[in-house]
Length: 300
Image (tube, rainbow, N blue to C red; front, side):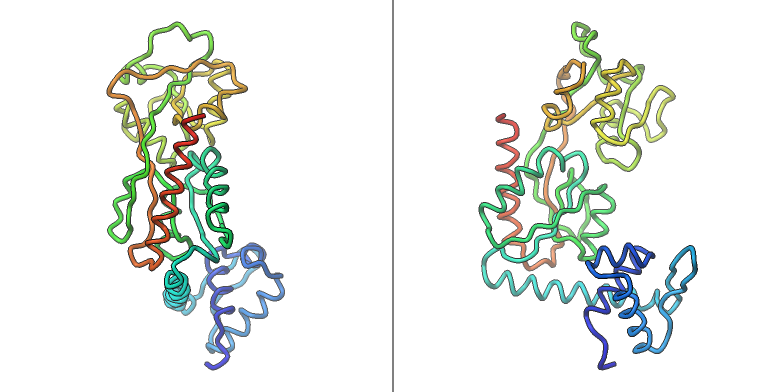
């Protein structure tokens, strides 16, 4: 197998992940014909087809499934070797792949990127915004270096570093500004607007309201905090948002804000990365930059 190359393995990994030649090619920054040629050459080198191809979908063969696990392990080892070399240099250079959950990314990310670029000129920052379960999976698979999430995630193979905590704020229609702030129990009786299933912020809000996973009839879902706030402005209901989102999401909405009495609902934000990552010392530097960025966010 002297013709086996890392390029082929990376293209295989992309196609196995996306199950679509066009999407895999785009993710790999290569043309679709070029990716197809490399996959075909890889199959010829290994002596068996890796994918079942049809007009509607691309699926791994049984042999391809076996190869996928081994390729993932090889690519993680290669990436960690590169990380080890960078760690030996003692500075942050090259690629840094950061995952961020959607209820943090729009508000904190611009500050983080600016401060990271100012502190480390040679850093190539790649950002991935998605839900916590996907970030955890991609981090474990070596497709991300670190992620900024709500803690805890309780994964034994990850390092967790708590950075800061923030409260949740109640958003109501402007006409309800003078009304008493409802208790957690009272919220259960109101038309509560929350993010759709899969968002950890939804689970945290439900926990504060002492609601189970099965939502009551009057609880409505939205795809983003922006949508929820605009729905409140239209008089549809009330919602909770994290404090970092207040300035951005309420500036153009006809809503009022209220803070709860103690115990106030809150969340802890932190960074996670694989314990095996040799860049742990450098990632701690990134964590400190994220912490300082958050401080400037709440100072404004």
